[in-house]
Image 1: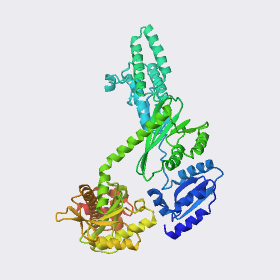
Image 2 (image 1 turned 135 degrees about the horizontal axis):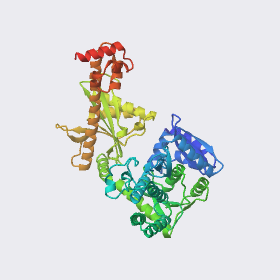
Image 3 (image 1 turned 120 degrees about the vertical axis):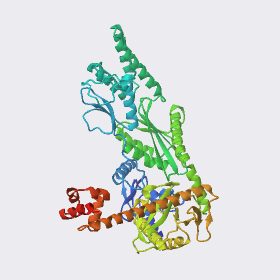
Image 4 (image 1 turned 180 degrees about the vertical axis):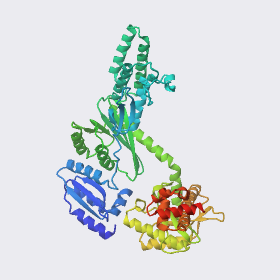
Length: 606
């Protein structure tokens, strides 16, 4: 964003009213990139176009992309919250917290057949009875497995009207084995009904145990000891499961517990979901570029509960916020009864929040610990190159050709010290023919920076913290010239190999920087150089192979470059084209009967 544009937007923001509303940030292509709400529009929006000192990296990146903004005035904060959630769901803006609507699509399915079966499914499109939806597939699978185990229900697809040899589960006592005709349909259905009640009650229904105990006593009185023993085993299994599902809250009503842990600008939000006094499910989410808990919850809570129908009566949370009153009003309307936010100070509620926060910290520590080596390597590399901060986002480039033919380049990305393959990109050199690594590198960086200005490709949507080139001072010189033309300033260095093609040093415009003494940085740079070389050369080989295949096919009468490309796209390999018959060949667009016969004849003779 230029200073003129920033001043223009700041002036527009200063003209906003001090009223509740929603603001909509747009980029130069008029795409919506962020939607936010505010109690006082003017105060909130002007913050984006003032000093960026207190902005997080994420907000700074967003502000760089803002070309204009719209706003909608609302009568109340509640109306602004509702509108914000609706617009986020509709437009999925790039810089908003976006939680995928992938919850609540997991069910327990009871099939609609004579010998009903219980199974975990991801939708409710088939015939039969459904229990759910549940928040996660893990809960559904666990519930089904427990119910099958307790009530000794089958997990196979056999037809139990056709008796057969029992499977291993029957032999080890995990299945009542209706397949061997020793279980009546009534007894089987009774077990299925008990399993359904067990799942619906989350395995904690003392009433079901009482029913089973009465049936067991009746069976014993009637001297039906075998059936009584089966009922005894069910009761014991249910009690064992209930013991594992330890009651950790005295609150019997539906409630959630939410807490967050931070390490720098990386955070983990942990959610505990309680039903009937039991921990029913738990979820956690990681976010980068966020350092303010209240700002995080301002976005997260709206998104989290917007995609859920099962709204709790109370939400225990680990920090206060001025926005809870409007969130409470919104959730109350959604639930149909009062919903409150509580920041507990003492007692069981506080203990639950502390436990939730400990779990968030545990998840975060695993994530951070996993990347400690990478973080140390990035810190060492940043210090070695004289950078103010470790380079979290590194791009690397390499050129590959064979005597100037099939001249290509590869761009790879290392994010937080690891390959970030979704951002890898390939370039075919277009501006000249022949071999010139300097001109090739200049073209690639020019195209990459032009793509950044367009903002259409996610891989080019941000500038890297560091660029590493597979080459020396010549490549560095031309790339610096390109960056100067684009008015960008990114640290750029070359990666130099020794006579044995092993990573040896970092090239600067002055003298080379020795790196072997810096073991972590050396290992990271070697990995980057090896990966960018592999990626570029594999693309070059693929281009050469395709060109050779095209050359082979274009030797056939009636097959030009377009037809050759269509054949390769359809059949994938030359061997499959070679073995294809006339009918298969003519199914390809552009291949006539005559051309198909020519192809068949050609491969007969070659």
